Image (cartoon, rainbow, N blue to C red; front, top):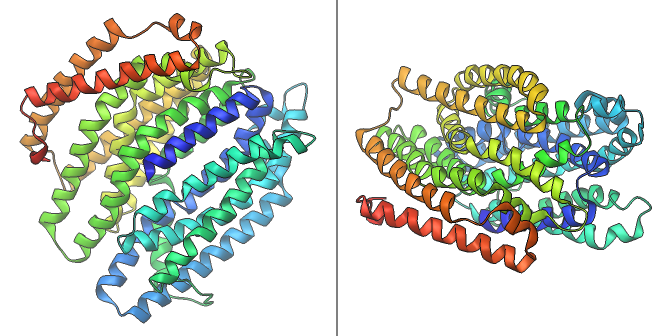
Length: 495
């Protein structure tokens, strides 16, 4: 389901690039969309879900159905109240919020981009309310081992944006405003889609005002987790802030390269983390130490086997990927080259991004939100410092490199704390697998370096030829990688 969602996400980005290109207007929309998306990661998939699922798992394992439902009701009501308040404030103060998150727009000679972004923010921000309630529903469904419905839900946002870009844009004075309306419509559809599935398991939240122990527990766990889980999102937002001060198109170049990073990150890191958190919380609630440790080991093993070759692919095939997917009509050759540069920087950090996604929930499943915060704050501070240094010398791709380097620091610190607290450490079997994966990846890298088409070939080819060249390279590379793993002794049954 996540694969389907991400493929449609690439189709969405292809349509947006084709119709609107990479310029001041697209930068304005992407910032207006990134602000609610940032808060969504805090209130939805990020800190809220990571703090909420362990509470839900514990209530499900140790309390009655009525007590579980009351906890859901009180938490849902409190979340709704907070989100309504935040949404109203941001709609009323949209220009001020836009100044905080993208001050570079305000200080440009032509302020039309700033005011356009502010207008679009008023339309896109209610998406936060809708998608956070959708995430609440998804967390409940995940706890009941329904992973497919929440994973499919993002498909609906992508469909809404695609249809808005193609059809609604024709009827608006400023065509790109159609994307803002597409975000809002997508949020409504996503929430409506999950309601029948909540009703089916009799877990539809109801309004309940007043205090409840579950709310107090959620507050204690969620506030620190705002930093610990969402550091990568905070770092991306800082990238956007600084990119708004760079030349027009910088925000868009970072966006398109980040979108390609998100494909393997979602399929590997987020998919593993989503399932692992639910399982880890259940094992911890039942005091199953062996099951807890094996879940971490398996998640990291899958992350390594799939993540390292994906990282090499993103770096080595960055030009081919961006040109094939996005370089059409309004999205020109320079846009493709600039996006490829930041993709190389993001791609180099993929394994670290995946590791953070897997390791942070280990602490959260145990009710420990403070430890991920320590690692997260250190990574965030390092990202800000690196941003300022690297952006000055290398522009937007310096921002991407800073984000990857801070992810490496974050992952390293999380593992350090795991070992220091005697929760988990790599087994000898993991190190043996690391050698096999490393050697197989080097062999694959050699093939890509010597046999893949050049950037000029991609630029000169039509769409069909580009797809054929890229597909051939990716499929052959994957074949070489997995055959190498087989030769080095890895068998499917071992996994």
